[in-house]
Figure 1 (cartoon, helix red, strand yellow):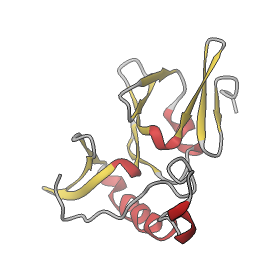
Figure 2 (spheres, one colour):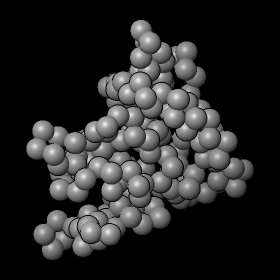
Figure 3 (cartoon, rainbow, N blue to C red):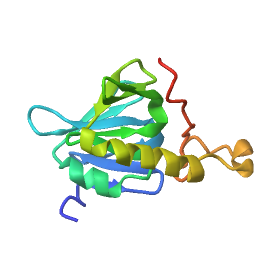
Length: 153
């Protein structure tokens, strides 16, 4: 990978090099990735921190865990941070837990519904996970919860 000196995709975290320092970001803390006006990838975290990195978003899309979904050409979202989703005037709207929302590209609406159904089957915590101390940061059983599409936030 061309960017391996700047970024490492581990099983439970993302490692980004800034200068000579490596930043460790657990996947469950990443809310979304987007592209800004200068074509930099912006990683938004749940604690409102942001990282700006000169790596194309397609590199992230190819290497992030299943819980992430590319909802438009310039945005990837962590499905664990969705509070609800609904059809609004023939557009699919994703409401986030922080009160913000995004519209899914019309070409990706079916892929979104497929992803939600697949994750509902494989990503919900099992009985052993109920007592696991690492379940919040485990990329394999991300804190995804099936959301009711009829509920507004």
